[in-house]
Image 1 (cartoon, rainbow, N blue to C red):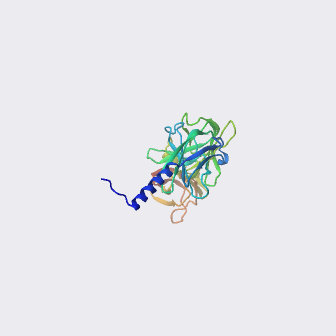
Image 2 (image 1 turned 30 degrees about the vertical axis):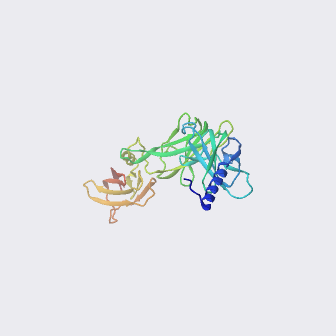
Image 3 (image 1 turned 135 degrees about the vertical axis):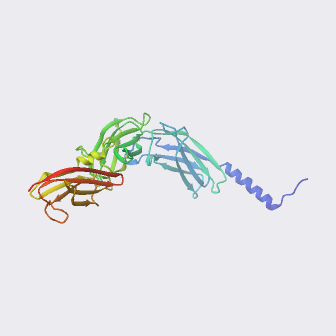
Length: 359
């Protein structure tokens, strides 16, 4: 039995056939890349312009994929670009620019190697797409730093201490400099300077900062910025500088004893205390610290106490003492001992030392 088709249904079928015919005719042609090699990093002005011709309005999607040097399997997508074209006379020739960057380890970076592009044209209704693989490959050959991280070591209590581990990857062999600046952007330490290091095809790079400044002294507690620069030794091309912040919360290192460090930096001078004047000096070892000072007679009687809070931790605390007790009366000649204690979120550091008072 033959079933008749109404005019409305027939019109719908013809419209569908006509749309399918038009959709199957969608094309992207004349694909080109200018330039086809990305070789400079300075200023990030170098990229590739992907030219193409489309025969109908729609959205063009450019998929960039590559599998190089420890990055992933061939075909791994690194970037996707899209642009919609709706006006003008078709067919029309267009282009999309790619700066050769994608997100790598928290930074926009590059990895040297060859990359394959795939272009897809979709109709406004999204009913049909035609992928067109591009025959040429784009090559990246530039110096770049990426996958940067900075992490502290941990002491026996699990608190963050020096040395601070600085890790990064290089797109190619380069001369690398790593420096540390404080919150005022003043250089405090040059970790390495123009040291030639291999690209990530060999391994990622790790250097350590021991928490010391260029004079060999522990830096004060605070926020510091690690800066990494790289230069191509063949053409002097400079990579984009990468930086990471690190909080120094303790003056102790992983191999040092915080208690011993605290003891070494607590003293009174002069000792014996003379002429009714002495100065106590402390160095806070960990972040968030409060220092307590108590002075006792040899028989154990508390004669003076002082608390130091809201101080700039990591800096030297100097307290001038006029050899008086808590009531403001002068102490007599003799031997005394003082207790210095640091209280902080990681625990308590304490030392007991003797002093003499002379007229």
